[in-house]
Length: 330
Image: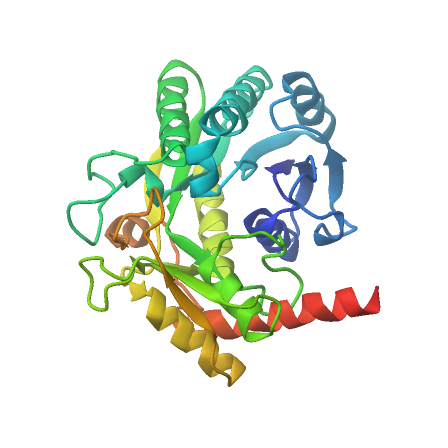
């Protein structure tokens, strides 16, 4: 039996691949490499370059590799881009997910893990946000993920099919062993951009909005280390394989840090000041998003090992230094 990881050459997907392989699983990576990197996939994994929404291809992979579980990471994730290109996001996220589910059900794959997002909550009325909070996304990105969650729920009710939808809060950091990290040059992740600015790869870092109703006026987010997130996926997979029912869970630490907190952590890791510029609010950004984490601790046998903003910032900075060394070597 093996696990199909869509988007396994990307940031979070590649960490899931590493976590699976570290414990001896056979892994098949399906990625179109539009934003992922071939080098991010270990040579011992089976890399197939193709579309996650190609039902025929996915069906062939399920049969050939005897796939018993799918972890679906492929998709578009930049909130402002979704505002300007909503139809592209609905196609790449929602339509692709529907095709992947159809292929899974047709191929007899019962276990499905979906990469969802806290953006399904929109501008939450209170924090921390529990999984039972109203879903009111304020961006097409959040809506595209919410639609996929609805399809998963309906598919599970109609078929022999179970899923875990993990609603990520702000994922950051890099593999502690230096094997993978956020490698997309245009990535909009705050910690990555702050690290790039600290290293001189960006002239400055924009703070989008300083007048929010938060302690220092900047957006507050719940940052989770990508390695802890991958570990949560492993626990979700084990639970599904053990017959666990379908569930939706937040993935975060249950506390928030502001944009200025993050900048300070990166400055501490880099031992330098970062050039920042205050800018207007960005479309689709809620003031605060902090995860309610009671359900994930109760449901999964998950124990975070990297629950520290300074560690997250330092690992992200180390990965940026690694990427620079690769660029210079090339």
